[in-house]
Length: 454
Figure 1 (cartoon, rainbow, N blue to C red):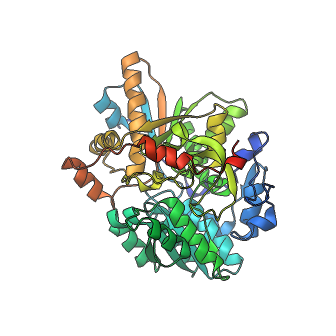
Figure 2: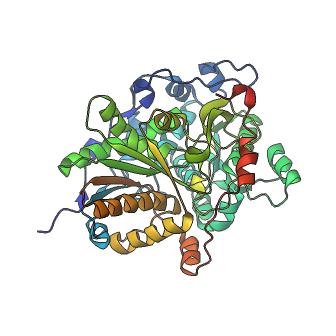
């Protein structure tokens, strides 16, 4: 019998709780009211989220119980498998051991349903009849569409226009689940109309789409809103990934020296890395945590730590985090899920405190690594996931050059089956290696609210 490739857990091994990193970090920065610069409380947050989610967002408790109806739905695809990438190791000629936790087996092909299901569940309990959300590459919109169908709710998605054009099949997937999807900026909201008045050819951004979704929610008292990334409760929901991975590493009789995740809004990265960080903070083995972001949207590597809005039209509260400025518009890279001007405050804090490091990677180099991975392991990674693959490949090659055998674990956050147009451009030599101009960076940073800058 050959060497083990796949490490699987049973349904009874699905975590019973979500982990909250805020419990292990001192002095968590509050969310601020932009009008008064005072901390927001539970009632303030409940304007856009059900009370249980508001409680999770503000909590410093270490764990939140996963409701049984949510855990029952998780059984459809969780626990997700962890693989030893033995053929990739051979292709790279590295002494490193490479593992990947694969979230592409979820119904919509990515990690996003881990938070979409509980958020829709809590909104249903709160009496909401419809969900309105924004989405970048369409993974969050697809997950919300799937979860809404399970709970007999309707949903509306504002999808970043450039991704709407690049990824038509994600839009079709949402429509299959009964969800309406609109390219953003649109003429449906005042926020969208204002952006189009400034630039009729605006490619869209997560910040603009978020503004449109929030305005639609505020205009309709029966609708709820759900965040796809960044917030504390979303990061907590995703920790089922890392909790399972710790169990699976034990099955492999191994433990990572390096844990890598792609970084956009931050919840995928948090979901894999935070449980390992908990072990480290509580006296466990040291581990390097690496956030892999695009050069075109370098939130962690070139952003400032400041209080800023999460949306372009300043409808959200202020969050203390790494930010490129709420009016930052990144180049139209194919990794649409990584085109966020800010990142999860807890991820930001982990980087700030030195528990996590960040690298910025170029689009073509990431697709190159994605192709190497696909030809070795048989899975085509989503453009976002290729950033984690690239960082893992780079670390494995470093091991080869140094003659050191480290254990590397990375998160394969989703498959690229709906992203083949991007791969087609890569093979044809038409995939642009988007970079960020000094002017675009300066304009974005200039939009950070100065009175609240830290």
